[in-house]
Image 1 (cartoon, rainbow, N blue to C red):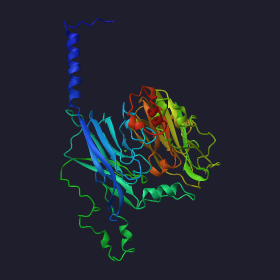
Image 2 (image 1 turned 180 degrees about the vertical axis):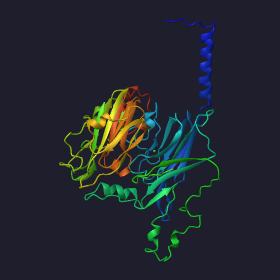
Image 3 (image 1 turned 30 degrees about the vertical axis):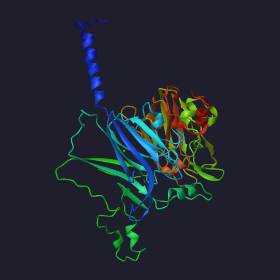
Image 4 (image 1 turned 90 degrees about the horizontal axis):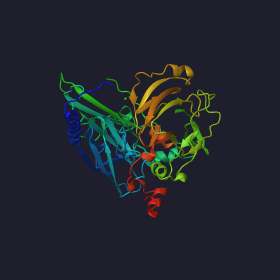
Length: 469
């Protein structure tokens, strides 16, 4: 080994320089505080008045803005009268704070009416994100907002622009989410149907093409807006010969929008039935979340808090994806895929025919706590030939990917973030019907979890008995 000659005191000088750079960067990081009150309110989002869920009297909810490296602290108070609430920070990896991921029964207990919970997490990467309710179907009720992370203070943007335009896309039903949930859980099954409106920054117009037919306004004047109404389109002011950055986030619960200018596990996704009720299933298992959050039950070894049997890792090689399942009966499970910390995980999402002939739907799948590489996608059933053509050189990095009807998508991620993480279809009624799985990795490495995050189920009983000390 060649000898490196440093001047006297050279090593100390270099260490001091590196240390001072680190300290200087840390001093630029800030703590951003927000106080949020979640409540229902009346709004005319699409010129038809309905109840919507909002924060601090605002819909969409207030925009959170920070710089990369900052810590965001959100003090959330549930002012709903009869239901719990949690907030998920979509795209934020929650490094070191898995309890702040905001997933009811997975990372925390639901925040009960009248209670306050404090989320605290670091935003480590610049980007356009959003946050939304993750309890029941509260995202469909309007509980969402933008989360924008700018580059760290002192750093330059990778490109120049003169202004910024933020667009938050969503869909909207006139039927309440409570009615939707009852229909999805009923016999006979009642699908929620298409949304009545598509909203841009919380504003839209309902059925203007048919308004004259269904009203006394023969010329459709009810859809002619003066500009001051709650549902009037937002006017975006731009100047000629200027460059604008367009930030777009889609919080849609059902609609897929295209805007032109977002270990090995094999999972097959058919419709199924459990005791006659319609469900979505992954490898014939429909996810049912337990009363005790997985994060607490796994960390404290509460083995009876959820299903001890892991879901199947592969689907049958003989499964015909082009036909309805030969056996439509599925099972309900709360099992977890236990992953070794640092394991590389390959996932093949295979779309199949639903219960009816010639029906296969699009599914956007979102992974919490990680990004994944999209190695490839294709039509038909995934095969060994498809495996040979996967992109292992420069695959795109995402946290959400789509599987198309009768198609497959191949993903890869590294289980390097201690915690318990949801992986699920982001179409809200599909998740409500069980289309999701749970990954757990390195939970023994998770630090202290706030007691209020686990103050329900078996962990609450454990705290009362003092056995968590």
